[in-house]
Image 1: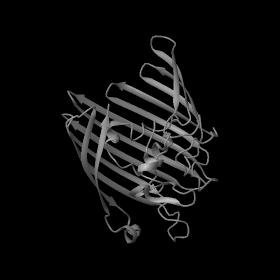
Image 2 (image 1 turned 90 degrees about the vertical axis):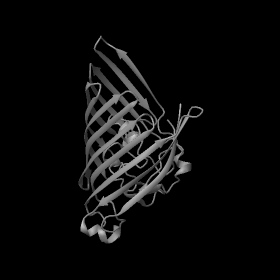
Image 3 (image 1 turned 120 degrees about the vertical axis):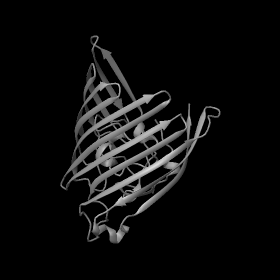
Image 4 (image 1 turned 45 degrees about the horizontal axis):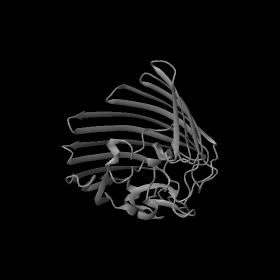
Length: 304
């Protein structure tokens, strides 16, 4: 899996109110911007061996890859893949989806999967073009259950060694639970994801994030999506600010629509728009206004 965001987005990332996490230049934290993903998003392989009619064991190796931690990442789940902006709780739930060094072993029995990973805890650096050497200093475990074809649940825990480049002495214990419901009928599809994540930083704060997002596609033409998030953040201000390291609870509500044009030469073009509003505590309103809003107009292409 590859991404052209190092070219199309650039080192500074794209504007995204209340988004935080990682660094663009290796010196300052990104605030109100989403970092680009690396050129190499996944170079991985897996091997699965059946042991009886109901069970199998498997292994997974990636450089980079994704450890067994958190729900399906937002650009891989149907409820999130059509939403052009990343969740502001991304670093509470699924930011480990690009990990430079991961080994996972697991067991599947009927609709239950148990797996554990050793991986590199550090987030990718400011150089989005390279393959970074693995440290393999962190670990995680995840239990997933798919009781029916429409429901999926997971609970996971991981210890991340020094995940942030600018805070090398801080480790994080990350906990996550999620539930996903998917309903398909004819050519239509609807999926909803409810997820909660918590980062326990040492040293640092214990911070929670909750997400509810839903997307429905009708007649392969109309897509409507929405996302609601509430996140506790302590990194909305740079060091030196009187509000540096203060914890604020922020909420973001986003709604959007995409219209898909008829397919042409194995390509489907869609045009869409989304709008969001943020609900903030009084202390932040001096810096962000009382209810800051955002608007995005976009086009996207799907190839097959």
